[in-house]
Amino acid sequence: MTDLAFLWHMHQPDYRHPDSGEFLLPWVLLHATKDYTDMAAHLERHPGVRCTVNFVPVLLDQIEDYAAQFASGQWRDPLLRIAAAPDGAMPTAAERAWLLDVAFRCYAPTMLEPFAPYRRLRDLLAFVHAQDGHSPAYLSATYYTDLAVWYLLVWSGESLRRRARTIPQLMAKGGDFSALERRALLTELGEAVGGLIPRYRALADRGQIELSCTPAHHPLAPLMLDFASAREALPKCLLPAAPEYPGGRSRVAEHLAHAQASHERRFGRPAAGLWPAEGALSAEFLKQIAEAGFQWTASSHGVLRHSAGDTAKTTTPWLPPEGTPDILIFFRDERLSDLIGFEYAKWHGRDAAQDFMTELETLHLRAPNSLIPVFLDGENAWEYYPYNAWYFFSDLYTALEQSPDIRTVTLSEAAAARREHSPRLPRLTAGSWVYGTLSTWIGHPDKNRAWELLCELKQCADRALDSGRFDDTVCAQVRQRLAVCESSDWFWWLGDDNPTESIATFDRLFRHNLRSLYHLLELPPPAALDHPLSCGGHGGNNAAESGGTMRRATETPS
Image: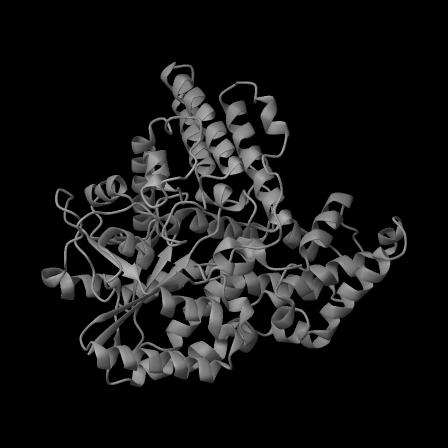
């Protein structure tokens, strides 16, 4: 029997304005109603399939924020505020500009072109823009509420479309949605969002899935511990001018502790496993993970190759190098993971599922009783599939339930079965699941400048916290804002390899967070925060173009 270990990683960074709490981008909401609901539904429909699902605490924080908005009607997301408006109420100028900017960001072949009413809204806007600069003023309140509704509809999951009442009714009606109909839609979406965490907890409680976690705000921990770790896999990598991130070890420890506290509060037990942000590991970080009590962690085959040679196999977990506390390390099968993440969206769902099963059977015949680790995003690939990958998962999970040779397991189950026979790494070369290096987050002048600004701010925060000027409440707010600033996502998007629009958005949000922390510290923000860090991108994405690991929400073309 060959074991197949899926790990579905769920992550979005903090999209809230640091001062107002307003959501500047709607991706948590949209992935919640489309992807997190569908991924839970697939598992509920196929109780014989076991897997590991990884949630980052900052994502769970925002899901709970949205659940609170739906419960109270106090909207902090402009998309929901526009959808909830009374009949005939015109959104503010800022809300109109925001909606026109985001409301066609989706993968058009699967999420826009199939829906004639949504296409008409796009074509009407294109016609208006083709006239003169004042023409958008002629768009009515109904246009904006219909557009908000359609954006929510195209980002609803197949499971909601099949079992809900209001969503299919509004899709059939097409437009001119009344306030009553829009409230019904928000009620349905609110029930879906509010039920997400309990649904995944129920799947874990009955033993079908294992829930793992990531350090709280998704920090690139190896770089926080040592910038020079980037040179282990890429010796010529350019480093920031700052020699190190001040107090990195204590900050990483706080992210780890916060992650476990979040996990226990939401899921009723500590996490046994930790998926590091971006699959990024280093020897020093591995020791901290083990010391924090985690039993397993994971990374990519690229990191394994750099650490143990080109012939090293992912078909078993590995023990750490000598001198590191006992913990098992899994390394993803990159080819199989990327087939799901990047290739099978182009196939008919049944053909893709059958091809994947053929791949698994071939590996089983070559190496019976081995492990096949398939790790990838559980959220960003599905919009590229017809019907949000509904038919792919239906056929794949059915085939896995019926297979006599392939058994799905959680990573803790795989660890328990293989610990005694796991080989030991000769060393651990620092790297991530993108190229097996850390170059996506450091090395480019814009990325390095971001690290330098963060280092300067961290030094200011350390001095202020040590001064005794602030009470415990303010100190906690400072540490929380610092954690947001330490997210890996800000560094991912800077550089030349991403869409210019997305670079600008994340650049701005990163600087908002830095500026907010200076204000908390009662210090004047440096003038550098008034200017973009980025020199601009070119519309590509390094991970996607290289067959890397993940598509980000804002990468989808408008």
